[in-house]
Image (cartoon, rainbow, N blue to C red; front, side, top):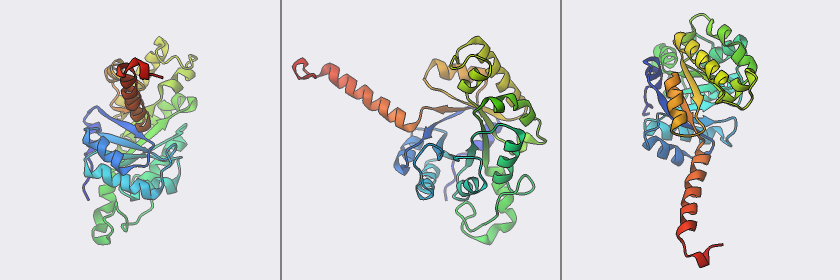
Length: 268
């Protein structure tokens, strides 16, 4: 099995990486995305119509082209996290983290002893389908698995300090993703992500996360200036528009160009 790029170490070293949200259940599309040079692809089990079977084929496609497959599970659930990791995903991003308790649960489900209590079985894709390396399996998985927390609500943002105070947090969590829109609401300017107060709070959150030895992450809805702003703030894991939106925009641009150049008498 070909492993995807070493995303975990790159984040620890301070590298900045980018990749799209993927809601379309297509291994071919994942391979195309990987061949463009994207660092990772988030396979969205919360909003995408993926099955476990389609998911494992997407993970294989990502592995084959060196693009780290990260699964966004539908909720902070032990079985969902276990399935995603057992099929060989590089890691998971766990949504709706609002408290220390939520963070502890995600860690427990995603990590083996002594970091957590992930269900053990070597008879999986992640385990090489064989018990031949039982002694090192849990150690290697803990060292390889990327775990991200998604702070989507006001409570999660307000409890960031408490979450970052978890003992040994940087050995357990690789990145914390903060939504700018959620932050705008938390500080009293809902939807105004360009508001100076929102940007100042976002910068504060990013600094706190980085000082804890964890990579901060966020979503870029546009290109160019937004990307530069996020990078300048210190974001390390930057998520791009979903695959379906990028495809839609590409075809919309082509058809717009076609409508402009075709004979006027043929235009609708």
